[in-house]
Length: 314
Length: 294
Image (cartoon, rainbow over all chains, first blue to last red; front, side, top):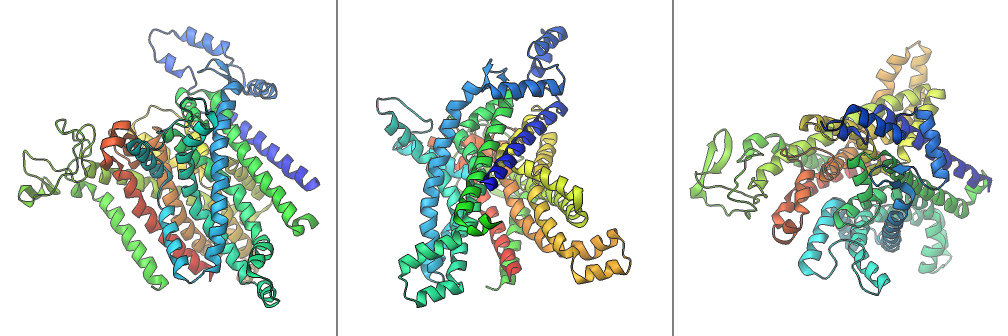
């Protein structure tokens, strides 16, 4: 319990650090939401100054940070100047969409990667393993971006799948969303699969070659039971750490996929916020993506703690 | 294939690909911005040798006037996609190389300092590294980009991207290098040299840095393709190198438009061009990793 508490505290400190850094960085950077106005000859310098004062941009850094923290505690996450509303309500729908997409993709990718990696590890040296190795290497070399565009192209050409978006219309909402999920999830899974399978294969191969596996086999433990009851737990540690780590890659890939396929997640919102120089919104998305990673790593830590008595002893 | 042949093969392959981009000025039949408004979205032309001429206007080949040649078709403004692909490769590949150089340099400097001196400096560097790693990679890039001016010239944009990509990428190499330095610091010959009164600078230069070479090389082969993809992503999203200068990213952005998707499949060429580059680097990275593990 103390271990988990410590990890949690660490994660929180990390988030506070990220927010502080963002504020300092924004302070140092030139320009803000009203910079565009300044180039407009019809708008006087006083008007711009008044607008900035009204939205509180001219206050000193510590005051603004304190105001932001207060607003986070209220659940507002700052005030978006571009949308003219608190950021919080803008975010939740987007977060749900991104989590739906990445969550499904992660689950599916692991469900495919674990059996495939185990099979590869047991079939080392056979042609089946070589073929899967070549295919996966090739897959690794295809950028997610290209994959997303090609899938979109197929969707447009064949009409079997919706070309972007999350919902069309119709009474059966769940089915509709699931239908829209297929292509983006496929892109993400294909993008993640090569790395995951490689890691599963490597750590399973190590477990299979270990002396305890040999002795277990000598004692006549059936193959299936040996693989899944004895070897998989032994090989699980690096994979659990990989889970926390892979979340970061997944969110990055998902940003591109969301933009290409018009999925209404955090990615497109982030892009709009950047182009509009809407600092509050940029910061909120940054903090959210950081929290996803922190939570993912925390989950991995807790899992490790449950799985591995060596960590509990420390 | 022995490991050596694999490495040489990968290097030659990558050399050819980079050479194509470097000599774009000679190999491409048209300048990147030359428009042929009367041929928008022309499909890839078939080759008729009778209508080709070689070594004209300082270029390898071109079509006899008034004909045109689009080996990979043309875009909305009738610009030759093949030429733009080569010129775009210059931007994308060079970004990868320069950014990797920058982040490896930073990582080497910071990682060596952290590992060699330890103490509060080490803790400070590693903690700030954790801050950088707390963000998903692309979100981090975009966040940094978000605070910098949007409307800038192409050259400024290019260097800005190199600095952003290289500047946020130092953490992973720095950590790995720190690890190597930490163990190298306690090696017998380093302790002996220190005992003979060698200065820190001499120790680092003569004994520590050579030991990090393996990590630096493998990291380079991992980082360069990653950074090429980063440039492609940024330019694709409209935050990197902009028109009329081509980069594989901003060219792909055009391929994403609806009419390009339905009828102009050749617009995908820049995306496909990335694949052989990544394959080359992957082969190199795998082979280097294998030989380091043994």
